[in-house]
Image 1 (cartoon, rainbow over the protein chains, first blue to last red):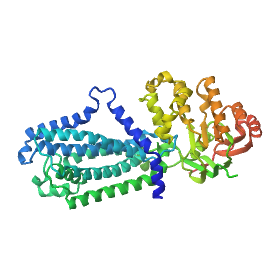
Image 2 (image 1 turned 135 degrees about the vertical axis):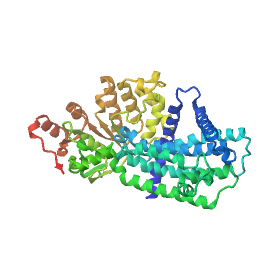
Image 3 (image 1 turned 180 degrees about the vertical axis):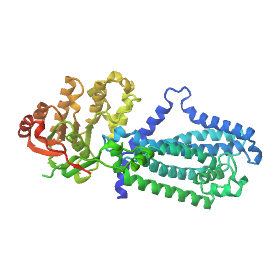
Image 4 (image 1 turned 120 degrees about the vertical axis):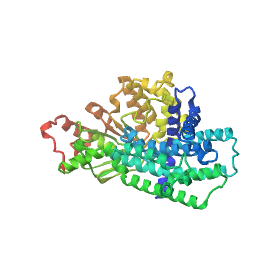
Length: 262
Length: 254
């Protein structure tokens, strides 16, 4: 059974590759700076947030070392999560014309969107390197280990993406709910503050947010030179497995009905 | 000989979209207004047929008789509500041509994209690229986005991509009604070529002349029921004398 699914997937690997290439081409077609926007966009967003939280609210004074680098890691990881899940959610329905006519494994579309977001995210890491250079931060030796929490976040997002895309076929409200939920998450993921300085109950709540753990794991590798904290790794991997399990199960149970609702 | 496609007591039930609830609010409103009713409708009702290797199989019937639904069930797009479809071979579906095209991409990019949608490898597509371009007669438009193409040009490209390989089964849903007569002749010729190489073809058409010219077996669908199947001329002769009042009723549930 697993072998069969894998063979089916292997047959469509080129489709996956072509879809990612297409998205990439279309995203930057007719823009003067093209792919440079993958770097500029997070950099400028980070600059805005730095200006806002650093001067207006003076959160910088609260003792976060190297605030810009701290900020951009949170920003990059969070936008990967938001982009991938939002795009994945709409992907199945958007490809309705195709799915109504040809047999293609339906999970290809959410999977493609999450992969596309990951490729984008890797490009955007240049922005992180730039910030580290400008702020004269030594890159710690444990930095390459950040790939581990990033891949775990990929699996986590894929699970959520599969779940959302299946739900979105039946109930279109999901999109609006998810949009608002993501805005809530921005404030609950410790992107621009250190939870250690918050009140006790806030710290408790944040600990239940998986995104916070993924972001912190990346910071621990790149910024603080701690490497992979085993306990955090267990939390991250557990959340990824749970999300992927639920996502795959719900998607699989409902995929035969999709075409009747599109 | 084993049939290449067995359709075994297949029924396909749809919940009619009278009240399709696409948002939570609509759903709850409908729930309050005396519950949610589903009007069930059988697009296919207990259809069984066998298609043998090398057949040129025609499907006829009025609009809404379930021809396209049957094709999509065979192609794996729909999963039947009951019954079973067994397919022993590879299928190239020509159902509404150009389904896998992205209108913002150029013809060249679309050949690769649509080719992989149909399950070919990029290497294979590259090796047949010139052949596709020749057949579709679009050499001068390769780097033009598809949105600037006429519908005939899109159909030509799609037919060319879908028939580069030698599939075991070719499913064609009224595709021959697009394009000018020269292109139609070309398509028929290509299909005849594939046939001589052993490909089984299933053709849906409203043109009885075309069915009689090309098919050796025909099935006649009437409101989701299989009314008659057999040798082409036997079935089409009866079909020509068919009148609306003789139609079989569609099965409704609920």
